[in-house]
Image (cartoon, rainbow, N blue to C red; front, top):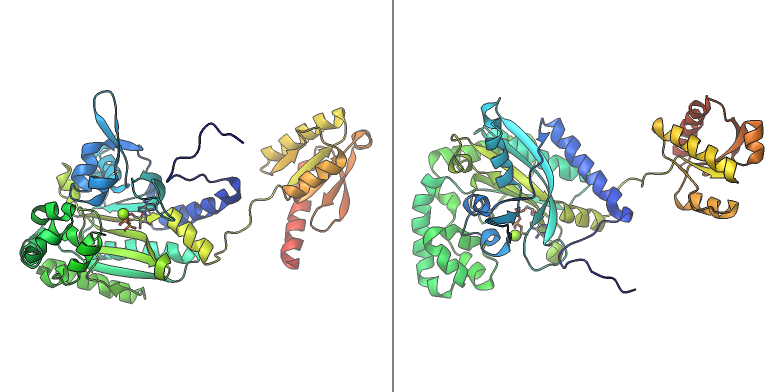
Length: 432
Ligand code: ATP
Ligand code: MG
């Protein structure tokens, strides 16, 4: 087959064969976030490029290499590479930070990053994320981490580890940057071009560089954890105590600095899988300076984002349970024109009562319709022919047991069907 156009590299389709898995994951995300009091926000797919340059940071890979920027008539826009910047902009622009604090929001959205496409690394991917603004307490950090952990458990993922670190505040970083620059100075000429330009402005970014030479050099670098001010140190100690009390296992990994500039104090990552399959499924942390930097009142904030493609890949790899694909409750099988009309009416009245009902739209024979009813995994089939229309009674066949029952096609039909359906589902659960 010659198709006019093909899917763009780095993008993916989700067909009905898999969409129910996405629905499950999204439902778990939504329900869990709501249990912690987070409410949904919906933000635009693109923003002014400046927003990302200023909040994500102009020394980051995301801004320097990965953004999809498009030209409007007069200005440049960027397809969001992450959800935090747009969400905070939305909070500020809608006066949400003048309401009761903390503000807690979540989102499920697509993100765009121009990276080398591979499994779990796409040009368009999806994130579930939460952002909380207004609390500087370590208990907010603990709550957010707890929410992420709770999600991972509800997905059924094991083999996931939590790494935490503190990268301090601008105050601790002054001293730290001095030490870091002093360490990096002799290696300056060996660093990749991008990192050479990061040396003055943001040397910590060099520690997150994926190039081989830079990561080799980064291995011996001084650790920001050793340079924390009293406030940041106490914050980190309290967070660890809270995680301990909630029995959330973690490793302090002084090497994680995270790829975006806006983080302060706590940063964390959930890493799934082993060996080559190993990858970050969730990353987050505090960004206490961002809201002020964006023109708002100084307001501490924090959050995380999960890569949903990577969550699904790991769930598949670990054989997690995605539940059943939703089943058609009843297929109404008409024989002849008069029956077709009645079938359409019956199906519609069933749908209005919340049942999943289908009928023939293809003019198929009895046998072919039965086959189709099997394909869509219908729980029941109701056969309607001239005889049934005349007598006002028809056979309702339970497709799981093969049992047939006589049912009246009167105005109590949906009610009667409902009773049969419940009994059938109950029996099915008992048997299997
Ligand atoms: P990585 O180090 O793998 O590039 P990152 O630090 O750039 O990740 P974040 O900016 O923290 O990632 O984004 C949060 C999550 O979004 C990641 O943990 C990952 O699960 C997912 N993610 C990031 N980039 C991609 C991508 N290009 N394709 C698919 N998922 C992604
Ligand atoms: Mg990345």
